[in-house]
Length: 68
Image 1 (cartoon, helix red, strand yellow):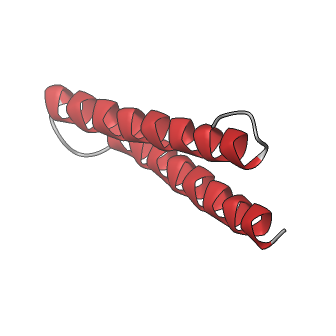
Image 2 (cartoon, helix red, strand yellow; image 1 turned 180 degrees about the vertical axis):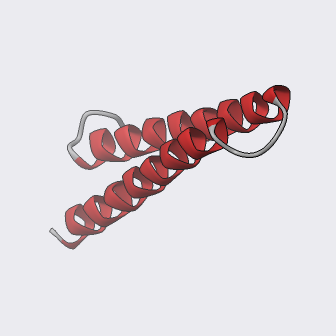
Image 3 (cartoon, helix red, strand yellow; image 1 turned 180 degrees about the horizontal axis):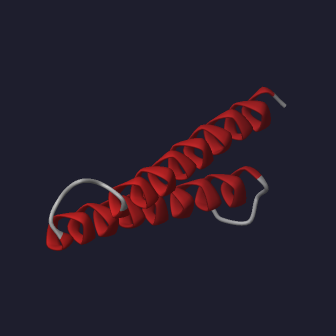
């Protein structure tokens, strides 16, 4: 039971971090920088958000017994 709650906390933390990176990606589009720099920053933050979301999904599945 404690493990299940810990995994929920971890999953929420990863999801929150992913949301923060999505927000940073959007902010990068409106920064006072060149278009190439804005695109590079946007892509970096979107990639990081996708990685964090994948880890959150993996954690959730593992805690539910879906993945060994």
